[in-house]
Length: 84
Image (cartoon, rainbow, N blue to C red; front, side):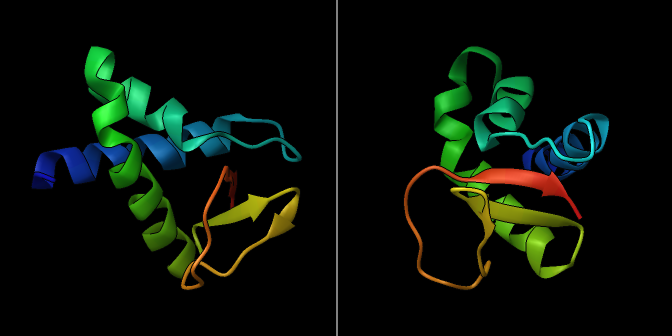
């Protein structure tokens, strides 16, 4: 992932998660779509990795099935991102 793409994903995840209502969340695909346009699927793993990074920094919370997950844990499947 380029430095510019990484920066844009970080900014987009933070912006989108803050714009949602306090009890609402975003999907990593929301950020990937905003940054990647038609090639958003290519950015999905990068968006998930960026969300992990932001969660480690305490800027967002990653959830699965409504429960917070450890950003360093080995998890798979759908996740949601909430403002931290």
